[in-house]
Length: 89
Image (cartoon, rainbow, N blue to C red; front, side, top):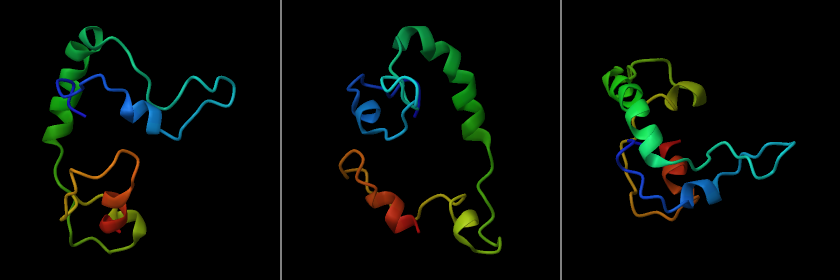
């Protein structure tokens, strides 16, 4: 997610299935102060945007198809739905 696009709604944190085995309150995605992290994450996000798109000529299997940008986009699906990921496969 772009550092500037976070609205602070916590939906991504609440729907994240990844949890620490030792501390269930600690997840794979955790909320932090936006102002503190925004400037630190801008260079990382800018680098991410410069990465080349995966070559669609690669041998197609489940692992390599995850590298491609989706040809379908469901921006209105519910948080945690997985509909976008299913159509990608």
